[in-house]
Amino acid sequence: MTSQSSDLELTIGPHTFVVDSDPAVSLSLASDGRDGDSDLRSLRIRVRHDLPESLWRETLLHEVVHMCLGLTHLSPRLSEEEEEDLVRAITPYLAMVLDDVAAARRPKL
Ligand SMILES: [Zn+2]
Figure 1 (spheres, helix red, strand yellow):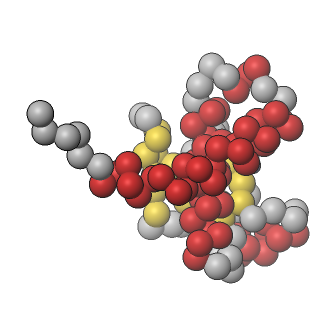
Figure 2 (tube, helix red, strand yellow; figure 1 turned 90 degrees about the vertical axis):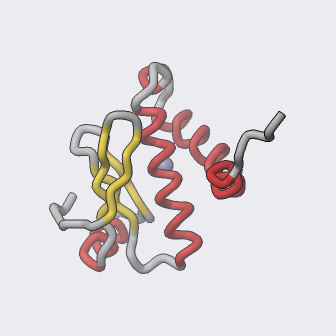
């Protein structure tokens, strides 16, 4: 991992994650054949900077879901493959509903 500075931070529970996304990150991730990665111990998420915007956002959400799982009791129960399957299954549906949920207001009675 690189130690690039970033203006983007995301708060997940009590933790603030730094999101790194720049050409150096892109090069590093590309050499591993990945679009993104994340690390709970360093509270960092990396996403390739050269992705199309929609794919960049989906990759960021994918890594956020990994970090959410990592903060739960479920993480030790899942193999890496099972976690990846779960994240890949959930993330597209979350992406589709995220903006609507953020804008939703409880109906007035
Ligand atoms: Zn993944």
